[in-house]
Amino acid sequence: MSYRYLPMTDRDRKEMLDVLGIADVEELFTDIPDAVRFQEELAIPAALSEPALIGHMGQLAAKNVNAASCISFLGAGTYDHYIPSVVNHVISRSEFYTAYTPYQPEISQGELQAIFEFQTMICELTGMDVANSSMYDGATALAEAAALAVGKTGRTKVVVSGTVHPEARDVLKTNAKGHGYRVEEVRFADGVTDVAALAAAVDEETAAVLVQYPNFFGGLEDLAAVEAVAHGQKALFVVSANPLALGILKPPGAYGADIVVGDAQPFGIPMSYGGPHCGYFAVRKEWMRQIPGRIVGQTQDDQGRHGFVLTLQAREQHIRREKATSNICSNQALNALAAAVAMTALGKQGVQEMARLNIQKTQYAKQRIQALTGYEVVGSASVFNEFVVKVPASVAQVNRMLLADSIIGGLDLGRFYPKLAGHMLLAVTEMRTKEDIDRLVDRLGGIHHA
Image (cartoon, rainbow, N blue to C red):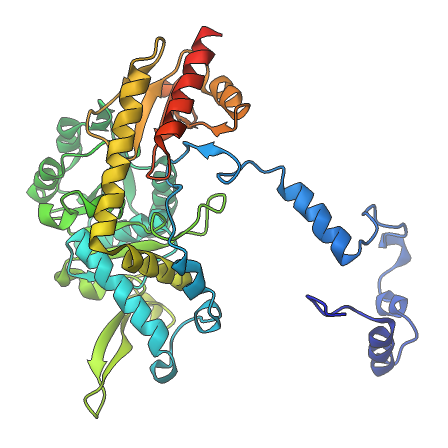
């Protein structure tokens, strides 16, 4: 019989005891006084056979609500997008699946080239000059961008819009304590950043201005106006952008962004109940040597053949700690590979079409819900992927009723914004069919009448 793991046999146990020169396992604990030892049997279930264990775990897993068994309209940073089948075929290959850090380029050309392609495509999407070879996720990438700005400008304040993902703002505040800068949040109006309030908050002590594009509510920020405010005080302009949206929207680089970060999850990375994800980090060329993590570059060997190497590494493991721009210890290379394979499989036209479908289906859902009695679509008219709906009951109650019909509803915004209690953030991706959206709308209408 083959095993998925190596079992401990009585013979194995005896051989180890013989080597140790003891008769039984109890002798290993003779130094521990009886008074402090637990003398009873542990209250844990009896061991199961492997088939029984697999069946039991399968039953437990089946209790989870997921996008395979339900129609999902939940986004808020993790989205149900199409993943080309080739993605899993590539990343499951052992040379990628087991790879860690490609320190030895002579045996890591495949991994290095994949990372190089990821960097190249991120630069094309963001309109920036240089991108690193991935980070943990979008939230930590945003915090790293703030740290870069503080370190480079010597200023002590970072201004962030209230429309940036709440959890990303929490990560930013946590990092701020270690780096010794303060975070000031700016209010929003009509679902987008209040530019007047932003201008009042940004001053000569501001190292960076941080906005999200599209923002947490799905709204499209006026990046030109935000850029003018940031650069007017010589602060760095940082944009956290959804890379899929950049397939059809004007890139932040075209608006003069200094740093563009984000999460590559929309490309080839499953939701997996919230992670792991893959952050990206792109900058203008002048900030290349301050970029956290590492950069893969293309070169030639002494025979003129193309090859790939780790060109820059700003990690504390490789340079003196006091000169390191980041203490990031690893990255999400496998997920970066998944994103690169997905973008390659889709191609430029495929990415644009995928983004266009997100816009069209979101608009259809907005129009249908807006026509429902008791519901109100609020916020900016221009959105991507997500929008805010005021519901006639508590969001928790609405979501419970939707789930009874195998529909995963939206995020309760009251969790993060007390003033938005009774408001739901709905996400509509290219995976949702017209029938899915109509079913959601019909169920919402039934909830109001009930």
